[in-house]
Amino acid sequence: MSTTLARVLMRRPGASLRAANAREWHYGPGFEAEKAIAQHAQFAGLVAASGAEILWVEDDGDGLADSMFTHDPSLMTDKGAVILRMGKALRAGEPALHAKAYREAGIPILGTIEAPGTVEGGDCVWVDDKTLAVGRGVRSNQSGIEQLQAILGPIGVTVLGYDLPLWQGEEACLHLMSVISPLSETMALVHAPLMPAAFYLMLKERGYTLIHAPEADFAASNGLNLNVLPTSPGQVIMVDGFPATKVAMEAHGCTVTTFEADALCIACEGGPTCLTRPILRQAA
Image 1 (cartoon, rainbow, N blue to C red):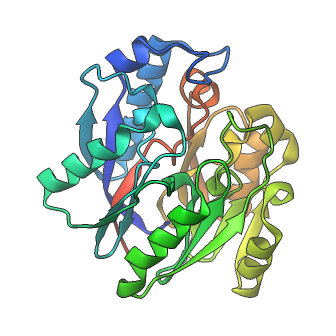
Image 2: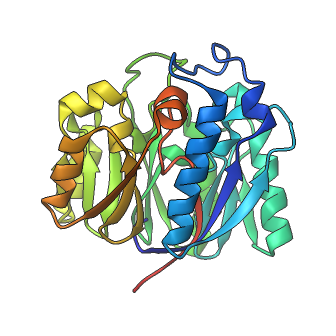
């Protein structure tokens, strides 16, 4: 999740975001569609500048406002994609967009999560190339985790489920990646108070360096200070406005680039990682 980003699936927000009902989509008071669209363009420029190829899914006015958060509707493996099933009902149409994009790009699809199972990409963390941790909570359930194991088992991947707290309720979004962002192969930025204890201890046992993000930044950003995108090991993009978190990563050798994201990430509850679905990462 932190090797060099070579190819990534993104969706440019447009008509669907402009038409979004902020209350229905659980967007915060800072939401401004045009400003969010401009901030997304700035972020996409940073992703492109890293050298990554962007495979675009365009917004044709389908009403799927959250579909700019391309991390969630699918999961990528070394052998192909898994089409997931969303826990948020308003996002039910998004996995089909990913399946279409993968078919058109010639990317194999290994399987699809079916009802009653749900899994969102934000709940999936690759611990190593053969171990996938999945947060079990509001957005991903036990049936989905079991289906994911059945799909990934034949390619040698073990799926481990970890219970997440309810935190701010069913309508809000606490993914496993809300409390951890990998920065390099064995280093991650974390918010320990909301981490599943067994997951935290497993990472420690495997030799991970866990950088504890400042709790004041986590509270002020509703967790978005922690949502950072590695474009290569130790090279990360994060939302602007949380310098203490930036300094914490820099103290561990990271180079951090920031962008204005108050109307996009803070208001819409999804950060740089959420805005990308890595398709191909390459070791240096």
